[in-house]
Image (cartoon, rainbow, N blue to C red; front, top):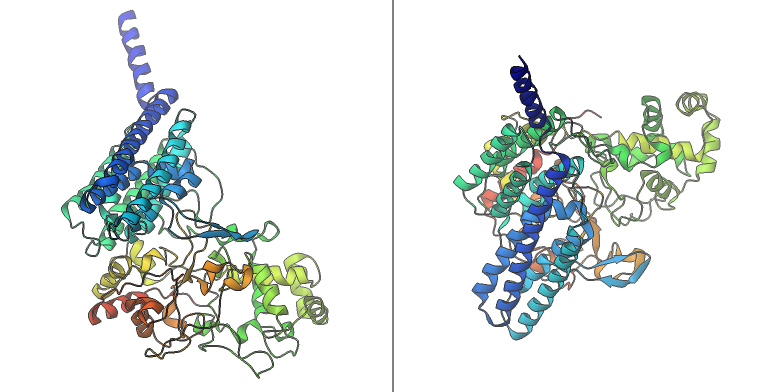
Length: 594
């Protein structure tokens, strides 16, 4: 009996270790060793590229550059999570930055994306020097990572958060080719990302289903085309990546791995970026106006149609934001309050405005509450005074009752702004045909629309600025920053003598030179309902908009802008492809009733 008892004890202990997996310190050690090995490989490739760049041919330099990008992709998941500032130095967008507090200080970009532009340019002596300088910058960042590698402690909840964000990154920037527009290596790099994820998961027990899903996704890439334009993103997302994300979510719960509960615009409990209700507008609300209830939202809706908000008592929010026009007005530029002039910019939709980390075309405020104050008090828009408006509302019994129920108080400037902002935040639906397709309804998109989606993310390069799944400049995977772009939008539709629109956009705020003519990248959701287009309403149809981008933006029209951020290269879209792209854009219309 004693013998069997000992055997039973041994098997119980063994089973216990199997259920728990590796001891935490061993698992962390294994993760650390893999990370350091990949870092060393990354450094060796950088050293080799540096030596080759001194005398090597353009072909040799390009091949090693691609190898260097591949090596970074094995590290991306970890580096982006634990060292985001270093990640930006290694693989951030090749655009200058400035802080509003120091607008005169230009922060110049470094890293692989900057290096790519030099590598794929003519290999002159001057260009070799630029290549060598940028490699030196990359090596400095690598040395920082190596220096800090020993002190990096891997925790399960952090590793799984990093994995989740990497899946978000693949679905958005990866499939759009955001960080390799010239090398066009995005698809093979996604395979490298997935292989790195698989390598990390080897340290966790009972991950058979996760492994199967990862291998299936890799297998799809291996058995299909690696051509950036031809890769079928719709199939990859719905058949492979989204199911993999959901399997990860289930695995995390089943193995009682904690969530990193840091609040973000996305629900921290969800892994599928296209899941219902994953985006939470409350995240972007100020602390004193989160979790608005139905009474507060209903009050906000009442106020939205209230003409007492304007000085002349004739204009409400709904005067310019018509629900039947997706909360726009169908005008290029609306009339100012006095009716004698026009407003400076096109009326934007309010749908999904609650998911924007900044408001207005020039991104000048963060909170909807501040936007409301700006619009109400603007002399050309409503010319209202919130103190005066509060007094007016106090004279109306139905408002006294509504404010009492919603806030337990009488009308005040603060509660007016809060109620209106809460109503606008409620205008988040994300239930278009595209969303239904991504959530498993295979018939939600037809063949033409699917072709258009693949063009949007591939040949059309739309997805590298209008990021999935919000289709705006809100940058994944954290969705905390909004990009602005310089497109070269013309003043009118004259394509022979095209002239840049006079509006300097974001430049007007802080006088930062590279922000001249820069405007926030708006969401394309519901775009079929929001014509005219662009900040000045210059284009009446989507055909005109697609033609503008197809020509290379302002540069393609002959407008010379040194700081145009849109690639001046023509997209070479055929007439059929243009129609397919527009068909997809039409499929971004919400099925909501306002």
